[in-house]
Length: 129
Image (cartoon, rainbow, N blue to C red; front, side, top):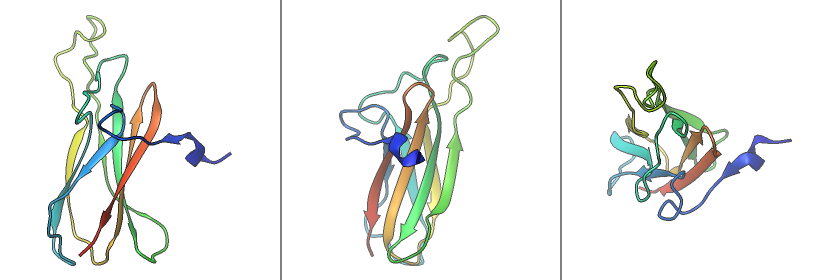
């Protein structure tokens, strides 16, 4: 059994669990740029004690290169939990992160998110120079 069979994908405009990858126009080889990953861009994710995004990981696969490289991982650890009860806590974290990266080759950025109820979700975008 391979983990890939458990990873789901869809259009983020119609599915609230799909990670969204945003990057600037005009990326140049060897120059740093910011990549933002998030869940719930078009349809907000509940982000409650009972139903939350636990993490988003960002990977890069260079054209013609070997394995993927993990660029960043963002963990979201506050979901309104409290000794007072579910969703009574003072803090929440939204599933949103930004990484500054530098790529020396074109390839594919891949984001994978994990929902505690609905499992693994992925999306990808090509990076060209």
